[in-house]
Structures are given as C-alpha cells and as structure tokens.
Length: 101
Image (cartoon, rainbow, N blue to C red; front, side, top):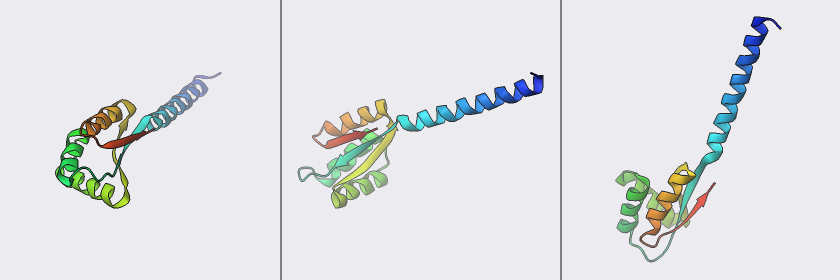
C-alpha cells in the first residue's frame, strides 16, 4: 500500500468517525415537555421557565402561551443530564413535565 492510499484511507476513517460522533451527539439531545395545568398563574410559570431553562422573559412568556393554548410545549432542549436539571426545577412548584430522549 502506498503512502497516498494510506493517507486517503486514514482521512476516510477520520471522516467516518467524525460523522458517527455527530450522529451520537444528536441522539443524546433530549427535550423537556411542559404540560398545561389550571393551578398556576401565568407569571409563576414564566418565572419558573426563566429559572429552569435560562430563557429570557419574552421567550418564557411565549412558551407559557404555547403551553396554555396547545396543552404542552417543548420548553428546553439539551443533554439528558441538563434536561433532568431543568425538569426538576420546573417541578419544584408543581409543574408537570416529561423528558423525551
């Protein structure tokens, strides 16, 4: 095998590993779904979304309206570990969530 062929083979293997790594990373992303309830006022939900998901007020308000109008909304997307943290923070005040992997 020539040096050129070996170099091309190594580059192809590197590209395959890089593509696989990207695919695994995308599979590791999880989502937090927040469900509507009739117990919390809008402002409480907005504030909790801001705290849990680090969204600015406007985004948290938009997501709260989406939850209210549609019954649920994806409020956060990150690694599974980070989604657990966000979900736990939302649930501190009794909000109902689900984590999708």
